[in-house]
Length: 219
Image (tube, rainbow, N blue to C red; front, side, top):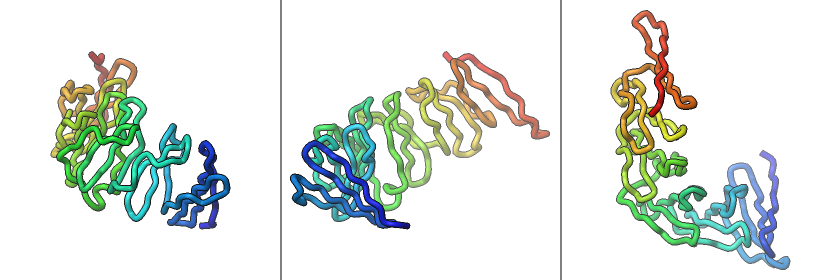
């Protein structure tokens, strides 16, 4: 890929990112003087904070003034969520939540290492949960206090839709329906379930492979 660069003004400073295929270099200048360099920076289109990498570790940088919110001390970080005001990080192999002042607010007992970290895309949603996938590829829901709303046990959990989520049983792969607190509303016995405006469509697959659907009103 061709080399290209982008520059962003942040207060009195200029951030310049030069992409070189799979690698990048980031330079921060103030009054024309180079003051910081990083291995990479991402989420530059975020609301207030970007993510930078230095010496193989990650941290957050304030986009308003190009100053570091945190040192690069994390194994992995994900963007801040506007609803909870928290970012999800891994530090010393443990999952934790950090606020926009750079303070760790919640330290969980969940261990994460290696590829398990890099393959994840964690993000809090409107119901205060985020989808967690363990190292056995089982899905669960973790809330902003670091407690399990749903322990990892399902083959799949959907994103939140108006306070509801569909899930797939790990043994049968059939679909069910739960609310934002993890309460099962429809047992996992359907071929598929889709959530609409105040209704859910339940799809059954007959022995002759014909798909039949019914609708229920959501509580």
